[in-house]
Amino acid sequence: MVIDRANPWAILLILTREFFITGIRVASASKGYSVAASMAGKVKTVVQMFAIGFLMMNWPYANALLWLAVFLTLYSGFEYVYGYAKKASN
Image 1 (cartoon, rainbow, N blue to C red):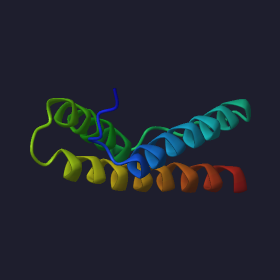
Image 2: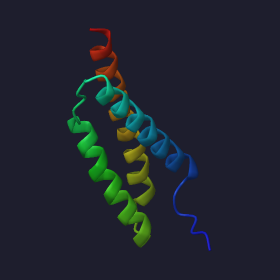
Image 3: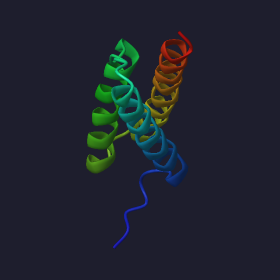
């Protein structure tokens, strides 16, 4: 049974960012760089957890939280990419 509560595009964007950033973190570690978690990344995680809970409980504003999580996910992803590119260029 499929519960159609979460937009598949939102899930795809979140998962793609997570795998991409994991790859960047692995590449950073192999080169001896440290790309620390940003505050946006920490806030993103909290919002994602709330969105998951709201979606599971079928509470109001669940999709709004999900899309806020997508925005924060992409924003923090850009921060990671920028931090990696900055360290790699030095």
